[in-house]
Structures are given as structure tokens and as C-alpha cells.
Length: 164
Figure 1: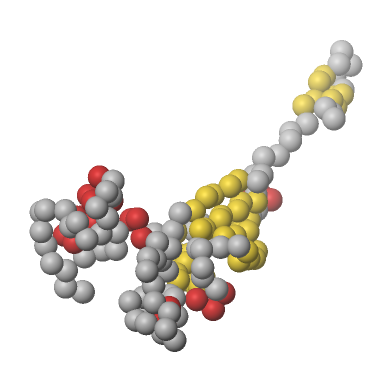
Figure 2: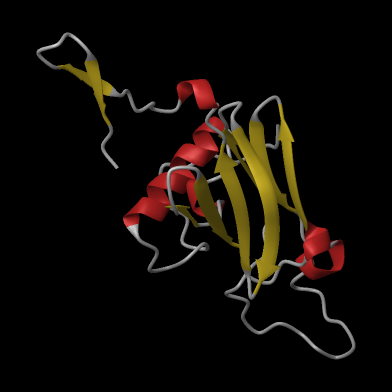
């Protein structure tokens, strides 16, 4: 576990005008040793129909070789690790030096528990958005079944009634 200094006074070196949520998030991160929630990329989850879903994760600046998607024991893990030379922000290279870097590529990892029926069909990276397409496979025996209702006429015979 990485050593982090602890102070109840919010650090002014992060952002002088940072919002309260970020300050509280950073405080709890120092207490627990976990990564701040704010370091986790934002994502959307869309249900296209009963069986098809789409997750979009915001990963600006990351390339395919810096991202990893894995499923192990029904646990989906998405992680990103920027190349080493890109994380060395303050170092001057070829006469070029960062004056301000607001778009940072931090190492991240987050996980989701998946039901055993969920399968990931494909993953695409386009314009800083990682899109995962997955399906929820429902076995035939668990899908709703239509039951035909029979009606008896006066002769005792059953007349089937199908609703189309």
C-alpha cells in the first residue's frame, strides 16, 4: 500500500477552487488508501432492448494498447495504464515543456460483477470513448411462454382460441 500523508486541512495544491465533493473524496481516499472516485472514468449504460446492452466509458487520450478489458469469474475489469513517457509531465523534452496539463491520463481500474448469462460481443475505441456491446442470454425455458386457452362448447368438445 502506498504511503499517503494525512491532514484534515484540504490541500490547496490540487485545485484552489475544487468542489467540496472532490475534497471529501480525496480525504476519504487518504484515509482508506483507495483511489479517489473522481479518478474513475465516467461511463454510461444503455439498454437497447431486453437482451442487448451497451456500455460507453470515457477514456480521452488512451490508445488501444493502453487499455485492458478482461472477464474472470464473471467479473468484468476495465483498466488503463498510460505509457511511462506520457506520465512524466514535468520533464522537459526536446525543448518542449508543459505549461498546464488539465487532461491527465491516470492509471485506473474498475470492475463490475456480471451475471453468468452476460456475454461481451465486442469492444470499440473511437474518439476517446470505449464502447462495449454485450448481450443477456435468456434460456428458452426461462422466457415467457404463451399458453393457448381452450373453450368448451355445448357438445363438450374443446375449441382452441389463438390470439395472434
